[in-house]
Length: 348
Image (cartoon, rainbow, N blue to C red; front, side, top):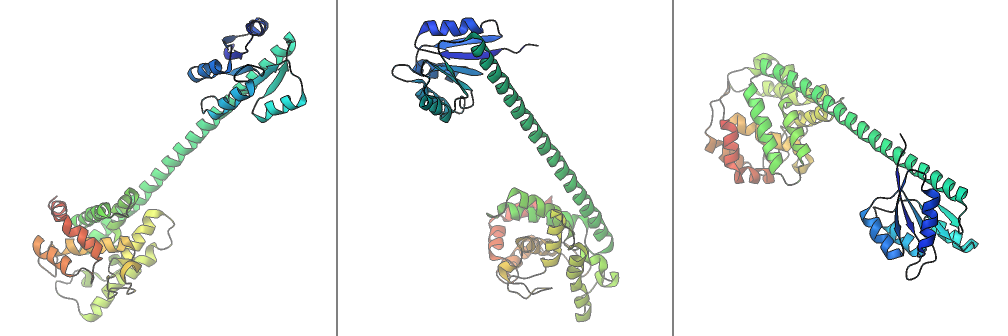
């Protein structure tokens, strides 16, 4: 199917416009015309053109000035411009190309020359537009495939985490509800934290269920002991953080790497008295600091084999009392300022 092109002819002499249109009229061209530069700019603002035939010598605003204005506009900057003029000096031709013109035709017109040059530049213009669109389509397709791949990869990581979380539930003193509550408490603390992004919220929500994955490596008799652990037993229990790190540390995937950080650091304390490395303050990763508070708070408010549950108020007071000791003071402030939010998480 033949393509139709829109051409703007600009010349201060109407007869010159008629001559150009008569030469080109047999092709599939739609014509618009302007008798001066200002009128040409107005028309170009409201209508799309595939080519502009632009006279150089015009009163008030010459063709070079019109060209400069067209190149400043996002809408018209790429339209090919062929300068038409009776002037055939080298300096004028050079200036026309410097301003972005694609060709230069002298008057009076030679019919074959005008027809051939217009047709060639229109075909080139069409080819550029097709190439640009193809590049945009390809870029969109690549982006779409990348997003699908990233989503599938995240799902795969989540499936691994969910499987390991189920294994933790079956072998430790943790319950599935504890894991879910810690994830929700952690996510909400991340949401309240001014330096955490939506991606951080999602990451900590998905990765925190593995905070105690290392417990699958600990003797079940220690895990399920219905009394306080001995010093020797507690030292063995503490190894679940390091064991988890050894299990997860080689992964290059974001969620697993985050789970590694959380499992390794959620028993560190703000004052440096935690384990396994005695990290202090902001040397503890923010994910580890958040899950530390979430894990302790939920554990206090629920019964375990070795302890009875505390009330919400008692647990909140414990968190406040240990601000700057066990927990990040800023996180404790966020927690206290939004107590009802966390009460709802526990109730749900």
